[in-house]
Length: 362
Image (cartoon, rainbow, N blue to C red; front, top):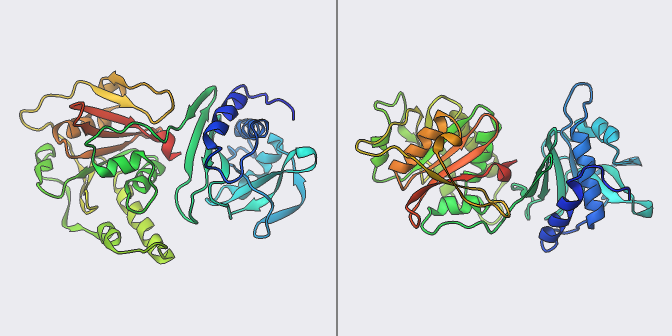
């Protein structure tokens, strides 16, 4: 194979291979993986009829359920950019597999991936995410690495979680994609609308959170909306029905959409909607939050001490203050630029933590 021209491709392939060997169904060797990364990166920098290519490459063998091309295509960026529109919709991938002399070529289009198949997705120019398909038919893909220019971020699935965190937060940071953790799809949906937003998750009782919200709340919900809560309380069994999953997806998008309204959206830890467009205020007698511990679930990442203002604008400052004053709450904050932060109080450190989790949501 021709050595990749993208300088980060080979070192990224070496690190990804070591991480994914134990979990991926069929994994290309490091030269082949570097070739895939190189092709995805250079394709991301091209334009096809003015559009940025949004492409997904899956390392899977040709199969009967896919759309097989009569003649396979190379991984040349110009060819991939032309094929990109055919797999822009969610769930479609260009299938890639070794052909004669082990040359990687595109054999067709597939939507049927074996569990833990390797997938490379072009998100933006110069931004490539390496993923694994979920263990079940439906579910979020598991991010392995994020490559942005010369920056390589390898996801650390064992990122330390401080003892005493709410179980909902622990599941979110562990990327538990089970239906028991609905915060993950809520975070993904919040990020997707691109307007930025804040979601506050508060205990159902007692309602001390009201001390940190400007009263009266313009968009208060009465009675509380329990659509998402009702779905979560229903026993979906080991294999949820498509109808139940579709209803759950609509309920998630409804609540995530409310976060686009100026102000914060509030739900209980049991997923009942309380209000949206709420204005956060400092609780009476509370000190202004001065510092937070910033962490990221990335290999080699070192926790940093920072001022909340360094994380973003007023949305981040107000969310940080809310959790600083309401230790049992969690705040999910999406920026318009795609960054995503989860604020939570750490009982062991007795300090506010800011978890930057956007690499998990791409």
